[in-house]
Length: 193
Figure 1: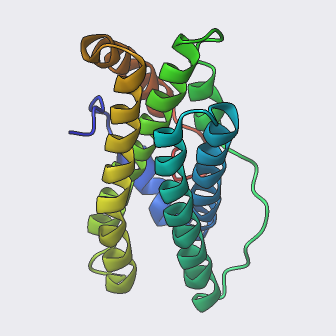
Figure 2: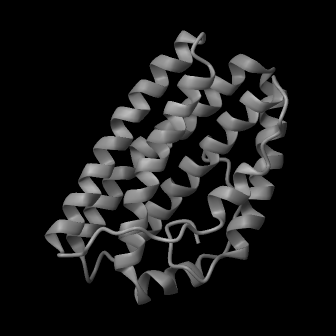
């Protein structure tokens, strides 16, 4: 369903154990960036009313999640501050082709893969912390559905711009590239490291 390639998560779960605070701060930034991505798509493709309508919904949900994560940070007395971004988003966005109509297709599919990986990470995090932090576990388990829905929305929108088989083929190509990027990891404890 999520169109992700399997990877090993041991290094990431070790980062969760070593610096959960940084993962939580980065999660807030991820939600804000997801809203920004949806807004950028509205700005770039304003004439597509269906896309704009769906992006508006995603923006609202992502900003709501951003606020929810900030509330968790506040409750835990974790200072929200700027972080050096990990390489994941930049590396994945470099896979986007430059010319239309391939560009819109890739932008939507890259967004779908980021949502899918977030969905997977939220599920892993919920299970990983369930014994020592049940409240956080419940929070992350609750985000799974909306992230999966965002992934599906982006793929469905991509199918407006290209034949379904072409979309699936390109999604598969990008999924392999995404798996290589996420498998390379990062020394920075981030949601997508």
